[in-house]
Image (cartoon, rainbow, N blue to C red):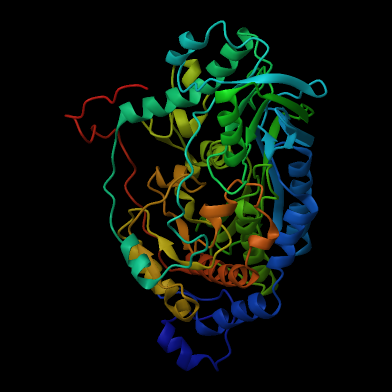
Length: 541
């Protein structure tokens, strides 16, 4: 296929064109190929079916859980059935699997009430139902322990400070307006603040310290408040690594129910019954990334890549976080394979594991193929994982494969349609992305913004100066309702949006795979200076 500018391609679309042949320009994929991608995605699409199977049939996919193992097998089968090459698992060390069989939390005094609650991930089971009075003991740091020593034996400890209900001032469901998109186009200067990183690490380490303290004090179990209202619960936890398993059962209780317990405990005795039937899976401590390729014609041209995380939390079915992104990546692979594209560069598709525990799968890929960053010498800090302990450590040592990755596109902001691309501070790549998105203005995707994003699988690549990007997506009810909650189900996904996203992702991947010049890279970072050398440390709570 002859790669020409979009306007010229429209004039020449009646000519005989061959997919994936000939040089490409920054202007991107020709019109006929875009039309074929659109036809395959909109008229023959399977993205909704893929998401339905991941969310309804398999459900929440905690890393190393039985459901995640099923998802690893099923997604490989789909890639193979669609004709992709080199479909494989790439294992990395993770730890214990964990899953919920059943759970029940109810107040038994002063009256019986079933509560909306969920076991906290990687906490142990109860030995059948356990019943005990509650005590409200807000514990935010180890400095709070002294006030509660000798008072917690035989109690179920409510460890969160009861919060007041807040007015909802934002709509629960949103689509971005042009004005809101424009606000995103503001460059955020880097901020290197080691003291803030240390505070964050201290907060993470406190989880283990709290469990040790409660167990030593003879508490029966503990409960925390959900961070959001309207009966939603999350169940996020830690302690997945071998040897770090928490000692006490823990549950997260819906905010409204937790507040009721706290009010009643203020004036009298409250008794809870917790029955947590959860299971650890130690059959294999290795987690797996799922990868598949469409081979490139030029083995020296490197590869481009799309990724999303296949794992989820367990409160819901993992539909919008991130079954949606996984389904879009898989659908882009299916579309391009169905069109028998012959790109210059290999196109690689990745479904990451361990994202929810700190981008562990994508970090393992980076550490194996792209670059090393030094781990902290403190074993406590090292136990937090690379996202919390070494994502900004120096010096960076690049590996032979560093120059082979020519572009990475990540999708992990729910199931909303793509509205554009975060340029992640890569000024040189922004105009190229703008050209590649130009054909999709009628689909609402024509925005490239300078603002960076974090907390998902492109982060470790961006931190190496690689051309790695996250998509801007319509929020829908992702942040307000579904993110990590029990309401993260297929009903909150929008199939029309998923089809649009898959078509755009497939097109941009082919743009990057066939462009004459690879996507511009950013600078390989070196140790920065502290941004605010006059800042005083914040007092600890």
